[in-house]
Length: 330
Image (cartoon, rainbow, N blue to C red; front, side):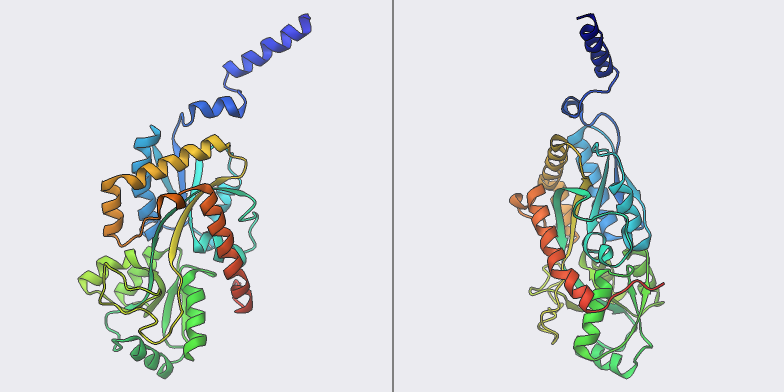
């Protein structure tokens, strides 16, 4: 009996010292700063979205949400950091098609993109487009195709690394149109856009539309087509890729939020609720829609919806990436 009482006293002491079981620990979550990893460099569309959400989620969670950019290796460095972080809800990641579909199919990653993460929520989605430097002689997509055919391997197209939407779409575009151009990899959409505006590269395939909006409005770049079936309300003058003569070349720029596997369900639910609250805020909605982003419906803002969506994207694109022979260049 004395031994049982001693064990009980030790257990109570551990709980008091902060070594409570997960069910008890989650009752006070969050009790300190949360780190939101962006696996890209600062200035890109996902970084912008992350900072808007971090500020709004802070109000809901009652703790600071600090954005940390961890770029490199096609986004796999930042994602890998989260995969190996403690599953306590204090390290989360915002990801995209590149980080959670394209790159894991190509890079020799030390994690399983499906098994090593717990989904939190789907996040705002943007269309993508084909854009070019403002000094290009082409003004339509058909003009661009003709120019590319006349200048094989001389044109530079910026990508966000191997396996990014810009590379995958660029390869498909070349196959569909009989054109050839060279890819220039960047660590993020921000630096790629800067070089396009400066005229150091010629094209971006699959550029995220909200990132391009200020440059379209200022006339510092050209847009040739929206890579989707519908025109973009923020710039309705840009034709769809179907209208421009290369039908079916679609790939929206979606975002999602994940935590390491093993994170308690109650913590995941708290983070998901903070996302829902943030995206219901009128000021946040106005800012995001002003950037050209589409906010998913309420029933899509769940861990289950993101899990199903993510699995479907992998099932669709991994065979395509493999059949296209897209590989990491050494």
